[in-house]
Image (cartoon, rainbow, N blue to C red; front, side, top):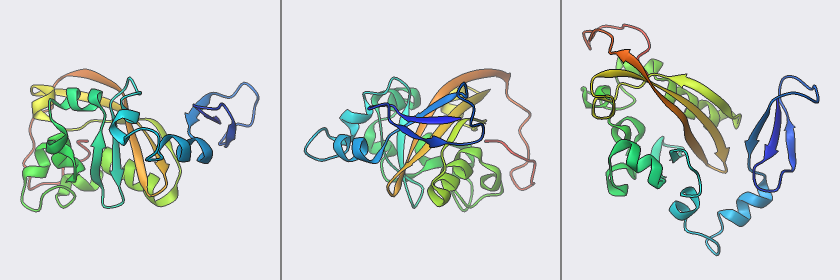
Length: 185
């Protein structure tokens, strides 16, 4: 896979197949990131609003720094309802309401969103269109939803983009929250 800066189109390197016809994924090079994220250019949320897809910025403590207008509309929330909140609290995960809260329940051990963001924070490696099945009752209306997420590290934060939201049909039967029942998000 070829990685190309979405702003200047400079080659960022290859991962996996080195073939010339390998799929292209986009990131942002250091020069463009410094220019685009500079306080002298655009405020962060205004920059994020350039993206059509829902985008969140997540810090090393896995707290949401902010999200763009599309992300806020997806969740039906205001900036103050997501900013400086752990991911599950910001997104409205059902398991974040359990004793211990976001990051400390049995379900958090297999949360694809949390694990993918953490992996990108730790390794610097992006993840592209990873399937995640978050348990977000306010968003899903009790139905099973699938997100395809992409993560990219930018300095000490991760850009989390929701590439697709799909209705996967009726929700799976609710499991006892005290039992380990496999991945839910």
